[in-house]
Image (cartoon, rainbow, N blue to C red; front, top):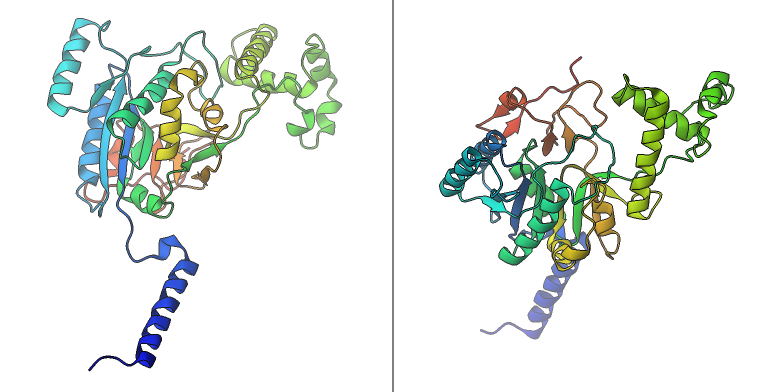
Length: 365
C-alpha cells in the first residue's frame, strides 16, 4: 500500500524542519566531522638531534590515541647539510635514512645571538624565517591536499589529540590560530604615561629627565623603555651607549618593515595556518619579508589577506612552561595544547600513556 499524499507531506515537512534546525545550529553541530590532513612543521638546527628525537617519541606516544578520521604527519625543516662538519653530515644522513622526516630547504643554520623577546632585523634572511617560508612552499607543493599546518618550535610540547579537537571547532582553510600579539616597532615616541602609573611620578622625576635630555630623538617614555631594556639585558654596559644602540636598532626595525607597529602576529612557540593561507604564502614566496624576527614578520605576511579567521590561543592553550619571570608562561591544565621552552628536565613531566604534560599548575619560584 503506497503512502497517502498527506503522509508524504508530513514526512517532507519533518525532514525540512530537521535540516533547518541543523543549519541554524551551525556547522559544528552536524553529526559527522569532516576528516582533515594536518602537517606538523618543525624548524630545527642541524645539530639538534636530541630535540628531534624527543619530539618523535612524543608524537609516537600521542598517535596511540585516536585521531579519528584525521591524518597527521610531521617533518623537520633544516638548512642544507653541505657545509656541515663531516660528523654532523654523517649523522644527518643516518637520521634521514632511519626516519625519513628531514627536509633540507637551505638558508642559514643559525643566527647571531639576540636577547630573548627582542624584535630584530638582520642583513640577510633569518634562519627560522627562511625555513618557515621555504618549508611552507615545500608543503604546498608536496602535500597539496593538506588542510592545516601546525608550525612548531623544536623545544615545544604538542598535545596532538587536543589540537585536533580544537581544529574540529574551526573547520576553515582561512584559519590563523596562535598566541596573538600586536606590538609597536618604534618606541621612540612612547608616552611616559604608558609606563608609569600614575605618570606624574615619572614626569616629576628630575634625575630621569636629566638622564634622557641628551637623546633628542627619544620621548621621555621612549628613553625610559630603552633604559629598562638595557638594565634587563645589558646591565654591565654603559647605559648611554646601550640606549643609543637600542634606539638605532629600533629605527632599523621600523625602517625595514616600513611601519611604526606590527600587524597582528603570533608568538614563535607555534601557530596554525589553514590551506588557503599556506597556498598564499607559497605563491608569494619570493616577495615575503625574511630578514626580520620570524614571528613578528608573520603579521606582515598575513596583512594582505582578506577573510582570515583569527583564533587567539592565549589564556592557557598555548604557553611557555611555567617559570618565574616569563611573561607568557602558564600552568598546565586540561586546556593546554602547546607548551614552549621545554628541556630534558621538563620533558620528565610527559605522560607516555596519556600524551599529557603534567607540568606545575603555577610558576615555581
